[in-house]
Image 1 (cartoon, one colour):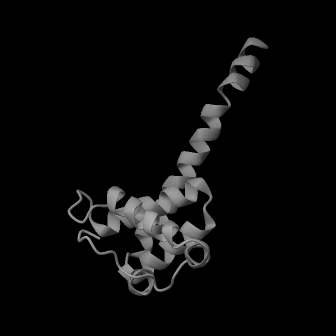
Image 2: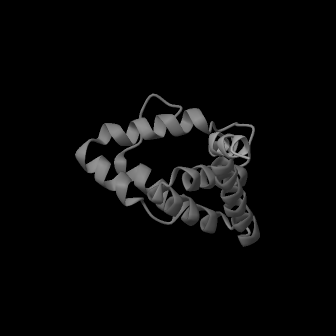
Length: 124
């Protein structure tokens, strides 16, 4: 979207089909209600993942997948699972990403439990 003219909805959807295998249903529904939501999503994507960014596409997909898992975003999890498959990302890399997210969330529970552990320590 570097030029002054923006792509049509059909062009955006064709790009999504090419890169992810399908169009996320939430994107389709949001676009049918307000096309501006699609274009705002594209603008945000370009900001977060510029064409000449520091990370390669595989790393970006795995980070996006990890964030989607941590946020419990089913639509994004499905979209990134599809994208990982379309990109040919090795299954062991995808599984390792899931394991890292699992560890991060388990660590969060331990961190969030600190007041409980403090109370239990003082009860000894």
